[in-house]
Length: 319
Image 1 (cartoon, rainbow, N blue to C red):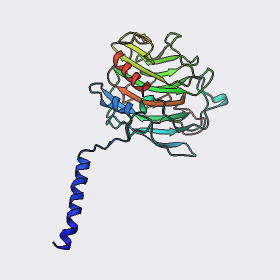
Image 2: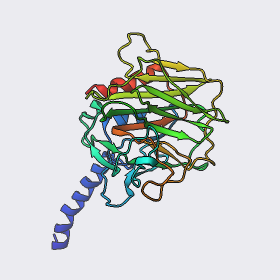
Image 3: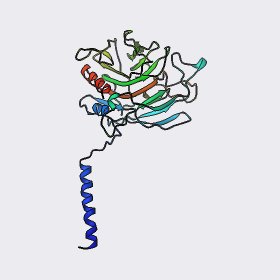
Image 4: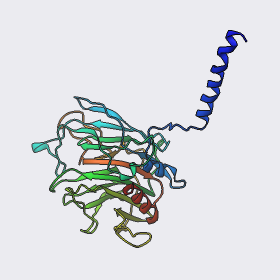
């Protein structure tokens, strides 16, 4: 046996074993994932438009600007931008009920979704800690359809105390159309929606509140279908199957935001259709910044039912 043939045999066998390893091994191409994310991404027929786990590594910036990208694991390439805007107006220029969080920052926080703690070797449990920073997602006719029917769901854990300010979780609204999901100045959930002529705020009953001092994460889902807004908050306390929504509203009219008129949608702020502020204290977006942890935000082109909402909640609170 020649020396060349002798050395070629082990190398050839190694190549065969190496190829068999990768035939049976599926590497995630859209980024590191966790068990809860796998549930959301694995459901067929839900009309998933975008899913941001918000567990990305962030850079640092001493000046306002982008500090990273929020991956969209849905495969629809609706990538968000982690952004620290210029300082929020203060003093006489302060926007009423928009808390001044200066300097605005974003950081990587601990996971608030218990369902992250699975056995996946690719798990990267984490959240994003919002302190005036935002995630803005470009909105265009090529990227987004009008949300005539939709679901927005997220996990949050506030970090403020007291009341008196508005905290936006997700917003896709112009001056006259679209919607925003927020917590109002009395720590009560609220929804703003447009009817094509103006924005109206619908306030759920006083029992649909959030305790900002609680260390227990909150799951929230807002749906719209057939003229009805429905809001679920931690849908596990009701024994009904499926659980009823905590609150429903039948507005006189709802008009989805026109993708040709909306500059961007926000996670953690509002004033979507305004150009971003270019200087400290300047006018423009974002407004009503969120303060606290946000994780696993999903947007659907369908209205999830109570049983689907309950399944997502239970998957998030169960290891």
